[in-house]
Image (cartoon, rainbow, N blue to C red):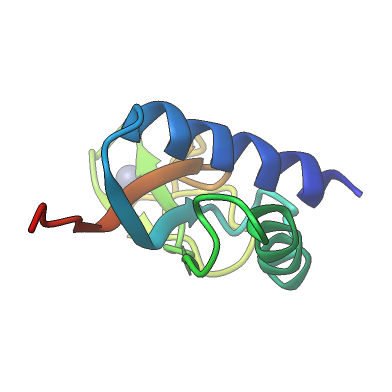
Length: 117
Ligand SMILES: [Zn+2]
């Protein structure tokens, strides 16, 4: 189950980013490409299981799944990749690259600063 190890590395990224700042993490926004074969349910489950009882307890995992883009090397047009297309819908060129299909990274972290009172 590789979602658990993904959740684990997401958590260490969050911890490294915050670097012991005194704040409470409200949400972690991650970007997961549609072609990355990650089961979102398992990822969310693994995340909440791993943060239980830690300083991240209660943080929500927000998963964004943008559509991958098909970038044409001939006409330069970018098209949202709906299915598996291997040619540019504008000019028919096969000189294409797919962007963002297998993204997997922490996009942002929402925190609540702890006010020293
Ligand atoms: Zn094209």
